[in-house]
Amino acid sequence: MGNREDLLAGAKRCLLERGWARTTVRDIAEAAGGVSHAAIGYHFGSRETLLVEAFVQAMEEWGAEIDRALGAYAGPGATPAQRYEALWTEMIRSFTTHRKLWIASAEAFVQAEHSPELRDRLAAGQREGRRGTASALAGVDEDAVPERTVRTLGSAHLALMNGVMMQWLLDPDHAPTGPEVVEGLRALIGSVAPDAPAPA
Image: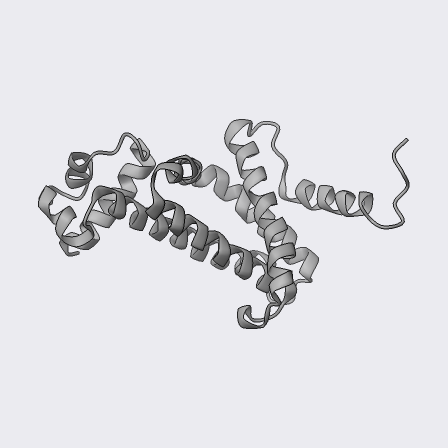
């Protein structure tokens, strides 16, 4: 790998092991195999930009892994309901196997308050996530997803994912399983249906 790739790999390692606030330029340079500090400025301009790029790359790698696992788990003949439950099973598994990445993700939201660059990248990622999720759940290409579907179906799933993630990070012994998330979602839909009975 060249210096740029080494720095990205080192920054990802630091994010997972030390977090945003505790990662220094020296930490990244050492994790990159002793690359010069000056290389960070040359390739990325700043520590902040490098950390943002490393985080985005790590999340993209996670997304590709989930796609591969989902394809193997659900299979091409699975129903939409089976695929959705399989998606939750794989995502919840990743909250354990990629715990440090998800902690870094939660920390990124806090850091974004002080970094316009990070905030812009996270916001763009959310927009892509809403559209990608809506596309997958609706069974249409991303270019064909109506904006209302993105803002409703995509937004609801993204909110659910973030909430389940926090439950797994804080209290994994009592956090829901994939089937429980889907069962709870069905119950929630029933409770807000137009003909649902009024609460006692």
